[in-house]
Amino acid sequence: MERLTYSKAGVDLGKHKRMHAVALRAIEELARRLDVEVSGLGGFAPSIRALGARVSLHVDGVGTKTMVLERLGALRVAGWDCVAMNANDVACEGGRLVAVADYVAMGEANEEAFKQIMEGMVEAAEAVRAPIVSGETAILPGMLSGIDVVCFTLSVLEYKFENRARPGDVVVGVESWGLHANGYSLVRKVVEERVGDYKRIVDGVDLASELAKPTALYYDLLLKAVGLGYATSATHVTGGGWTKMRRVLGSELDAVLEAPRPGRIFEVITHYGSVDPVEAYRVFNMGVGLLLTSPPGRVGQLLDLVGGTGFRSWILGKIVEGAGSIRIRLGWRGGETIEV
Picture 1 (tube, rainbow, N blue to C red):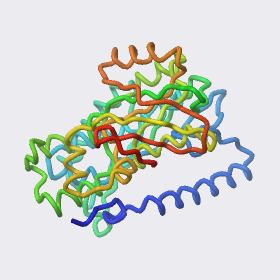
Picture 2 (tube, rainbow, N blue to C red):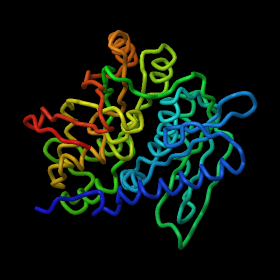
Picture 3 (cartoon, rainbow, N blue to C red):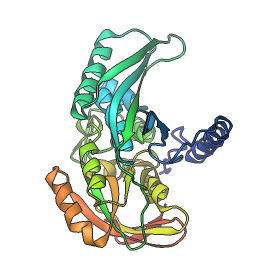
Picture 4 (cartoon, rainbow, N blue to C red):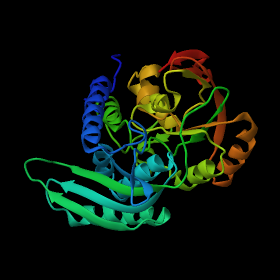
C-alpha cells in the first residue's frame, strides 16, 4: 500500500520552511532599516520593546481542522483552538496575554457556524483571562469555500526567559489531548481515501470523537514553570511535530529521547495511511503536546507541577552536546530509532 505523506496531502514542509526563511529575511531587513530590535525571531513569540515593556504580537489559526469540525458539527472547538494555539505559543516565551483579536473568513455568511466559533473563542479567552477586543469577519464568495479561523494576540513577556535548552537538561513530555490543530490535511487524506467516513469507529477508535477534541491549554502550566525556574526551555509541539524542538536546541545541542506510546488515534491514522514513523513525528504531536527541558535538580518539582495541573507527563530523555538533531527511540515499535 502506498505510503501517504504530508506532501502528498498538499503540504510540503520543505517549501514551508523555505517560505519562513523568506519572511525572516524580510523582517530582519525591515527591522534594520527602522532601527528596531526584534528579539526571538524564529521562536514561538518574537517581541519588541514598546511603552517600557517587552511585547509580542502573535498570530495562529486552526487550519484545515476547521473542515473536519464543520462536518462533525463541532465548530465551537475551532474557536477554542484558535485562542489555545496562540496562548500556548506565547507562554513558551513567558508571555502573558493582554488581548485577543480574531479573523473569521467564510465563503458565505453562516450565522450559526459563526455563533459556534465565537462561543468557543470566548470560552478559551476567559480561561486565559484575556479580552477579545476586535476582529474581522470576511465573507469571500468565489474565493473561499470553507471557513478559516485565525486569532491574533498581544502579550507582555513577564519573565526574562531565554527559552534555550542546556547540556545535561532532562526532557519532560506533557500529554496532548489528541491531534490538536495540526496535520489535518494528512488526516483528511487518510480518512477520505482509506477509511471513508469521519463518523466510523475504526479498530475501537471513535474517529468523530477523537478528531473533534480541542487543543490542550498549557498556558497556566507554562507560565508557572517559567516563572518558578523549573524549565529552561519549552516547545509547543504544533506544525512540524517534534522537529519544533530544534528552536530550543540551536546548532550545538542534540535531544536524545524515548517516545511514549501514542494514543490509539495516532496508530489508526499512521496504520491506515501507511505513514512512515519519521513522517509521523514530523507532522503530528504523537501524544506529546509539550516538550520541556529542566535542570536535573528541578525535574521533580516540574513533574509535580505538571501533575497538579491535571496533565500526564513522562521523562523522555536528555540534552547532550551535538549539532541540533532530535533522536527518538520508539520502544512502542520494537525499539527502532529515528531522527527528525
